[in-house]
Image 1: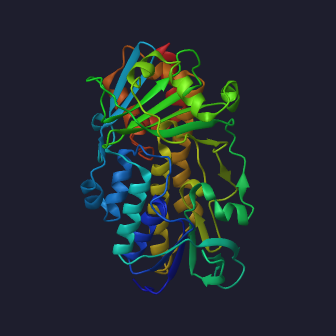
Image 2 (image 1 turned 180 degrees about the horizontal axis):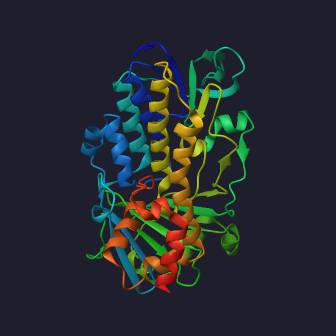
Image 3 (image 1 turned 45 degrees about the horizontal axis):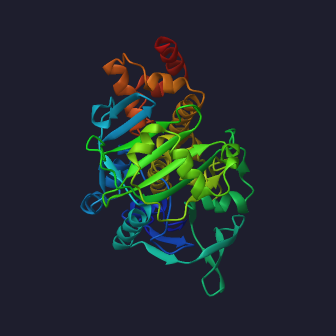
Length: 407
């Protein structure tokens, strides 16, 4: 490349930061990642989608991920009372990898970060960005280390991969309402002790509450006999209980299937919560910076789209920066924001339809046509940017028609 001395600073060493860092470092950039925490650390977003594997492969990290011993995943199982249906990602419409993994994010994120370091990326741990200046000739970042020392770092470009920390949106006043209703999730890791021989640990299990269609549970098995379990609904639903640990177990017991499945489970860790997590921004880019993944927009965990969107944004941004520093013409709106948003909007259509119950009617329809199911499976597998898929290209109108046909 013409300019292999360009320095890129990435805020955050999560999946989007590590993937972007590796892609840029491998093209000769000088990449520094500033990470506020120390890995491993807890994070949700544990059920990856097959589309993620394409980006992991692109970054040269696939072999390390495959060898790590994470729980194999080949699809999703949906349950509501006596109804159950499964989607196999290997039977999807779109080309590309059809399997993935279910991961404890502490280990997974550390693996990606370690791989980025192996490729030459510098990661500065326990460094927090406290102020920024993008009006100078080069972006300036004021950072504070774990000893409280304040220094200034300079870059040719900054990528914000800070996830829920949303560093640049907060510092640059980019926050914007998401338009989604406020929802709350309770979740934690348990020793699941599932003895049911019919339970498929190779799939995420999504359960709809037997009485409330806008309340749903996730159950994500790991390879070590533990699982991530959570429930998502409006915050008011949890007010009947005094604490989150009590609430999660009580709500699990409200579903007969989950109650039996997890009757021997050991809840041996504190239950976590996150509320009002859906977010948006006024712009995904500006002079000298771009926002990746959850730093830009986060929808909802219902289809595990968060990590997929994060990695897609990393891939898009890295490609544009490579061209930009090769003195090729680039258009961040046309080449980054617009294509990224197309996939986000596809997920949004299906998330909206999930909560109003229309997509649930499709999921549990008794006479599913294989061709249409394969197209839906592609979106559930994360291939929300494949516009050869009619349910991507015309997501809302296609889904509306399908809902009518399923009634």
